[in-house]
Figure 1 (tube, rainbow, N blue to C red):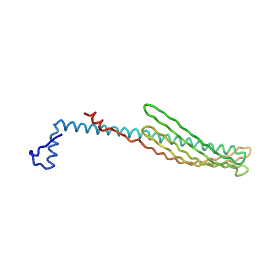
Figure 2 (figure 1 turned 45 degrees about the vertical axis):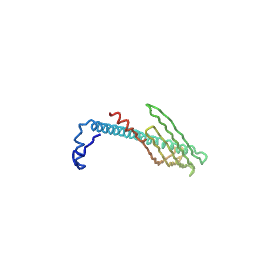
Figure 3 (figure 1 turned 180 degrees about the vertical axis):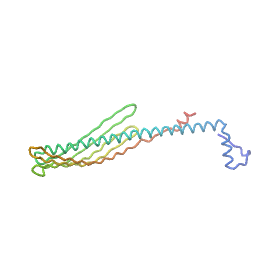
Figure 4 (figure 1 turned 90 degrees about the horizontal axis):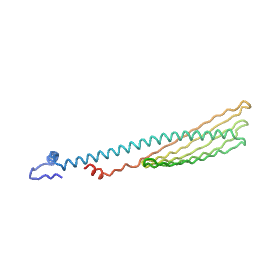
Amino acid sequence: MVELDASESSATPETVETAVADRTDMPGIRLRRTTFRAAAAVQHANTADGVRIFNSLAATVYADSAAAHADMQGRRLKAVSDGLDHNGTGLRVIAQTQQDGGTWEQGGVEGKMRGSTQTIGIAAKTGENTTAAATLGIGRSTWSENSANAKTDSISLFAGIRHDVGDIGYLKGLFSYGRYKTASAAAPVRMNMRKAASTAR
């Protein structure tokens, strides 16, 4: 700590500030400045690393969400197609449910994933040689690790029609529309400033 004797000058606050700044050769001031800069640098590095890691994880989550959504759309559309192909009774209920989950631990990182999807709909004959089907699908998946977590909600509509053309074969059309939303959050980056300051000394 630097002490200024009032007898040295009847200084204004500005000249006192200048006097303190000019006496940077004193060890106490140098140590404090070095400690502060080191602590600030450590804090900046930790924050930057945390943001970089989270951005990387978030990008992975979004990419995985898109891939999982596309895969699920394909499965649900296949269920509609099967409903059109196997509708000998004239009316068929299409119902599916799927539960997924898993955990992992690597390099001190623990994570888990859970997913649930449901599909419900019907397939019915609309004419002598024509069958139509429609389904609604909803899903939710959650993903979490030590540093971040995310969840994805989706809703989809599916429709299809099949018309048999005698011995020639059949014509089939399928349609799907889906939306999904992914939200992710990072765990707060924490830092012990006192520990960083003592390390700098």
